[in-house]
View 1: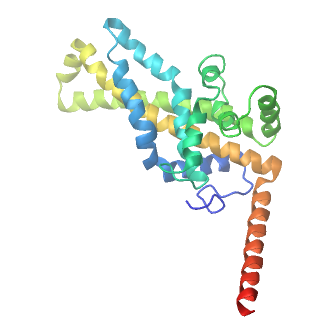
View 2 (view 1 turned 135 degrees about the vertical axis):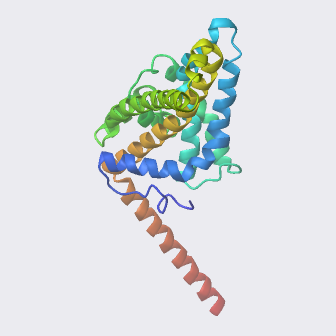
View 3 (view 1 turned 90 degrees about the horizontal axis):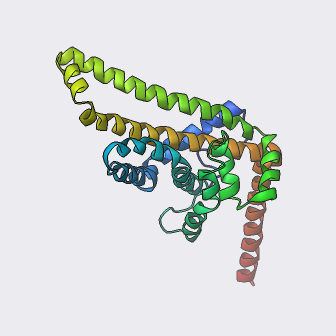
Length: 259
């Protein structure tokens, strides 16, 4: 994507459901970039959590779930850089935004951990660098543009993650019973050994659903700015002004050469 005016998430007024669709489209276009920036770090953290001793190993599910706001920021970095047309590997602005990922992280992991609108509000804190009263005022302003609809996608994504895990477990049991009649009894007798596959499925669903959740929240955030601020028109006028300046400069150069 060379310009966010021509990106997968083109700037125009949308309804909230269409804004979610635009976030899904951006997720599809950016998914390959999630692997080094999000998926691999998430798998490394998950494998490290499996080293917990004894029965504490089951805390790996809870800890990984609790760390979602941290991994959300990695996804937001990829999505925002892709949307604004920056190079993820070499851009100075990209490296600077990576440093800003930690802004307000402690609050997101503690008292804001259960906020249902965190995916759509996170760009305000991380990308706009706002905290305190400024953040609250900005959140209230953009709420008029559909930002608060993020609570709905939070519920949808929680349900999706749970249903995916349940479906994978049921499919595995049915397939085992169909092809290996004694396999279910073996799983029941060796559940602690087989539980590692459930954790692997949990991590896989975590990567898919959480990245999708952040992208849909980002779509709501962009659409709220368009609805409330007319951001699309502002950037379009700036683009026209830049083209006019280029034409004027080109005319001056031509005139100078003729003289």
